[in-house]
Image 1 (spheres, rainbow, N blue to C red):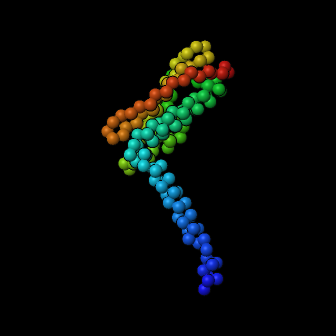
Image 2: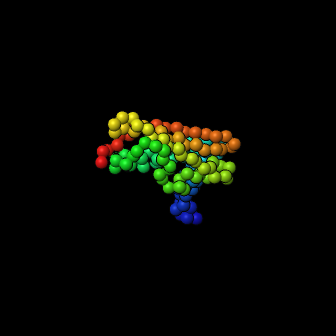
Image 3: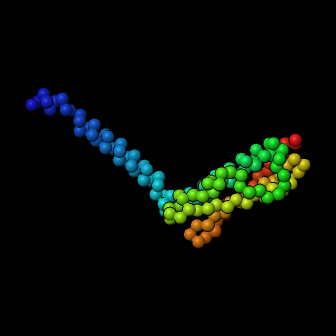
Length: 137
């Protein structure tokens, strides 16, 4: 009997280590999700920033090819990027992108991207501006 129990030494320690790892992982996941549930506006602002950066990337590509003219532009990315369901209320949030480009010099363009969305009956907006150099054709 002693030999049988002697071979099982450390089994309780192994169980404790595994249980601690599983509990730590679950706690980390829950602690990461709690701020998003309590404040979905932070997640929506981050999504709006992503949409604005995507628009800037497409416009910079147009400027590099020499085809960025002054005027108003619609969203150049994928349409599905304008909707998110991560707000927590189960209702998809739709983003709107308004892009205005004005002359800033001979080969310079002032690009203003405004991303708007509505959540909880309130309107929100993220506005960003950059100067882009248009490569002559």
